[in-house]
Image (cartoon, rainbow, N blue to C red):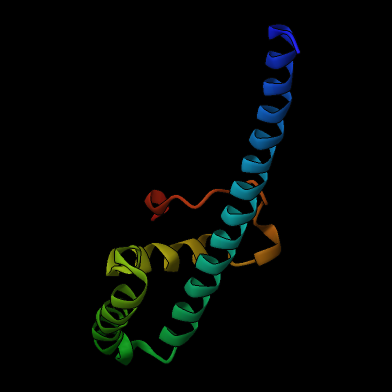
Length: 109
């Protein structure tokens, strides 16, 4: 096999791997967006127990963040949980989420 053939083989394999990486990234991103939307939904629905729950809700969010952070890492701190809350409020209709939408924790309104 000549050098040109080796290069063609490399490029073909590289193309397969690049496409696979893109596919994996897209699938993982979609799963994360869906999970964070559902977390935001649960938080919003839980909060809607009344205005008198506001202070209780703040403490509960801090407790929830502590529990989730210890099990799943720092991506579940209070700030990110609030971002998930805002994400759900911004896109309350799940089917309205575009599949290309990427999770960006700076979307908070």
